[in-house]
Image 1 (cartoon, rainbow, N blue to C red):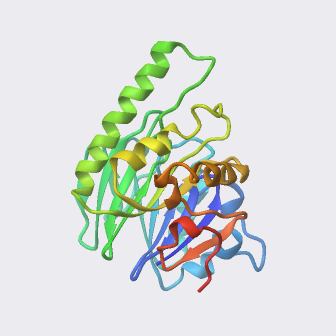
Image 2: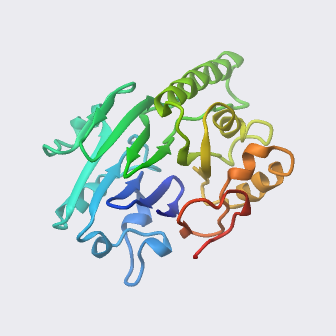
Length: 259
């Protein structure tokens, strides 16, 4: 299994039989010649001959733009998995998958469960080619200093509820890769509370922080937390857009593994 950090919350995972792409937007969809996954971009030529699954968590512009639907015109098999409400802007094909929160669909070659975001849209747990992959979208334990206590307490309640559902959906299995939010705009006290709660409640093999807004220093902060918190030893560290690890299982060693 291979994985690439593309930009912000946009990531790619290559399993035995599929290429999974999540929350593509912006420059990621506009490669220059010679730019592909290893540089943090989607080159349609790299998709040819592959069974491609494109996951859209919601319509915020830092997670989605309609240009992503042009990838279905490249001639290879491309299927979209997206929130049901997006049928207002995308009619879909017979093999695309529209989901409501709390819904699970068995699609033959993969199984997907959708979780309600604490912002808008969905998070996904995908069982595919013998692997479990989680992508949070904007599902996070948000805490903002300029919001009311009631808002922040409601965020905690809703997030904890979804983590319980995620644990139930995993059904005792370890999630091979969890892409989860570590937003640098949140204050230091609350920035990693969503990651911490995820790791306490769900078995995760490799934790990939996303929603970084280009601030890779967040990874260094997590490395510091790992000195005292064992669960953060499972974080995978990276310093650039592009390929971050191969053949999952690097955890606490971090860094780019190209072996």
